[in-house]
Image (cartoon, rainbow, N blue to C red):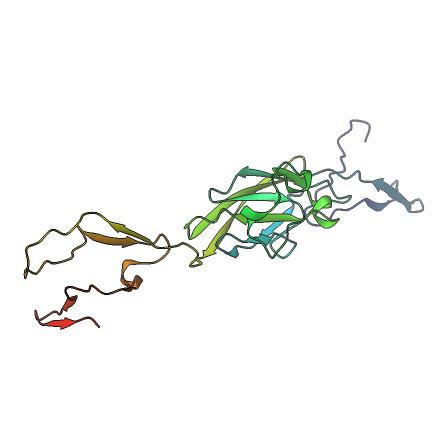
Length: 239
C-alpha cells in the first residue's frame, strides 16, 4: 500500500451508470485480524454513453405536410444525469421544407402565410426538450411531381454524434391541368384526307401518363368528318 500498488478501477459502467461502490476491508498479522470496515467510493458520472436515436420514414401527399412528432423522431440519453440532446439538420430535403410553426392542415403549403411570419420559419436546429414541450416540426412538400425525398438529422449529446436519414414517400395527386398544343394548320385540297398526327396536335400533362390523356371534341367539323384508324387499317367515323 505504501508503494501505491493497489488501485480501485471503476470498470463496470456501460448501460449501468453507477453512482457509488463499496467493499469491506480488514487487516491481519497472520494470527489475529481486525474488525471489518466498509470502504465507500463515490463515482462521478461522465458522458460515456451514446444516446439512443430512432427515426421512422414518412409518407406525405403531393403538396401537403406531415408533422414529425415523437412517433417519427425519438431519442433518449442513457447517461445519468441525462445530457442535453440537440438535433441538427445536416442535409435539407430537396423537394420540401422543414418548418417550425402552426400551419393549417386544410391548405397546401404554397397557400400558407409567407415565411416572413416567425412561426413559419425554416428550422435547422432544435433540442429534444423543445420537441417534447411544444415545438411543431413539420415537413412540407413543395408540390412538385417528385415521388420521393429525404433529409438527414444529426443527434449530439455534446460528445457523441449520430446521423439518421428519414426517407419521404410522396403520394402523387392529379392536380395539374393538361396542356393542348396545336403546332400547325392543316392545308388540303377539296376531297382529300389528312392524318392529324402528333406533329399537328399534341397534349401533355405533368402528372398523368400519355395513355391516360383523352381528347374530347367540343364541336365536330361541319364540312367534313373525323375518322379513327384502327390497328387493321379500318376506319370508323367519330360521332
